[in-house]
Amino acid sequence: MVNEGEHIEAVYVEDGRIIKTGTEKDLLEMFSEHITKKVDLKGYVMYPGFVDSHLHLIGHGEKLIKLDLSEMNTAEEMEHALREKANNLTADEWLLGEGWNENNFIDRKIFHRQELDDISGGRPVLLSRVCRHAFLANTRALELAGITKDTIDPPGGIIVRDTDGEATGLLHDSAAELVKKVVPEGSQNYLNTALRTSIKHLLSLGLTGGHSEDLSYYGYVERPLSAYKSVIDGEEIKFRAHLLVHHEAFEDFEHVKKEYELPFVEYGALKIFADGAFGGRTAWLSQPYNDAPETSGVSIHTDSKLAQLVQKAREHHMNVAVHTIGDMALRQTIEAIKSNPATEGRDRLIHVGLVDDNLIADMKQLPVILDLQPGFVASDFPWLIERLGTDRISNAFPFRRLLDEQLICAGGSDAPIEPVNPLLGIFAAVTRRKPGEHHEGYVPEQKLTMFEAISLYTIGSASAIMQEDVKGIIKEGYFADFTVLDRDLFEVSEDEILDSKVVFTIVDGDIVYENTQENNIA
Image (cartoon, rainbow, N blue to C red; front, side, top):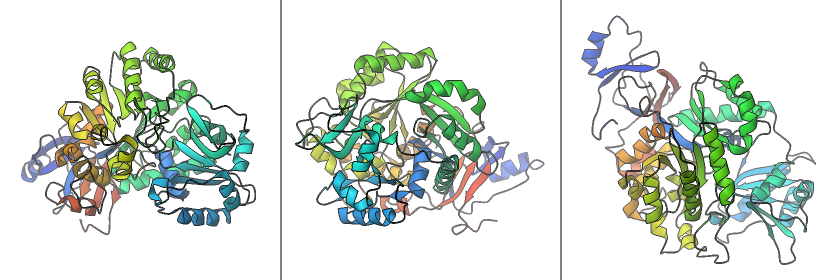
């Protein structure tokens, strides 16, 4: 993966680093006195270690151990799952669920708080939408949060109301924080279990690392930090975690960070949200939504507040990582960065869902990387065309153009919002369609080549954190992190990409996952 089409026959690794690459014969002769273990891949194919550039590690683990609503295709199926879960709870226990998506339902049904009252038997309910920018709460949950008819919308949030002004139970962005604050905290053991479950799943999918943002969602910042300290011990579990620091957790993090200097865990940019998501129509657009002309989305911060947050990062010699999906949010973010330019490193623009010529021209003048999620194409089309209309859809997730403009791009999943499998991201980048569909793809002129798609998850993720000199390719001096698949992705058909099996995941020169069903390597 140094250059397209280039292959290496053998690699010699020592102390977690690539010492030499070459032919098997030459390396055996050169290092015969030092070799303690030899692994013959017997036809399997090794790539630089895949790294997810944007996900929520603990949240992904929660999705795996909690009620997952993301795969449900009818409102009836969702209701049945909620009732079944509620029946197994105590009378006062919260009914919590992850990932509902009304776009999967033919009728696009969104449950009303009173329906959730009946389903839950009066227990408090909080359900996160797949985008995590919209939530559903029932009457009991709203009461516990103190939300009444007179409660005003908080900055950057919307309490959706009926014609009488009563809350329906649908909460957008920061409005959901009012309810989240009264949900009982999970135990430390729960966080540890969620993180361990998450990382083991990622390793089984060939991911050697991930850039995560977890520090502001689980109470005091030491709770998620303690989970990382407990789980990624460098012995039983090796996984390279790069953690963004949410601006709301920053002050607390500064007080304790010296106690959490951990192997395989590093800390990065200041995370900021500029807007919401397309699904809930909270991504901030310069023009109204095509299917809801009364709204253009939600701005999380005023211009001055966003600029202040960027300035705060600069004062602490940090880059920023800004969630920006709509074109207006991207414009606001670019202006904030321009007014407080980075003197070192690269700022991160996360998602970059809608662009235009002027935005691209401005991004090219800044030291930024674009943190892309190819899986959004597989999940958001074709309903995204309804949201944006045919005139704007060609500027949505335009991966081909962004790369052609020489912008540095990384690839992630945004798990648990989307499936974490990097092969699905690679498939979506190459085909621009959902698995199982057979057409030329959504906005097919934005397809990437296989080399470009894999590069998003290798050298792209490394470039996002200024580590392209030690990560992302198989080369002397680089970390010995590898993903081994049962086939060559450059030789298979598009539809065979998702049939690929992970054989080994290797971190720091050690095999940390082995698919015993697939390989018979001695």
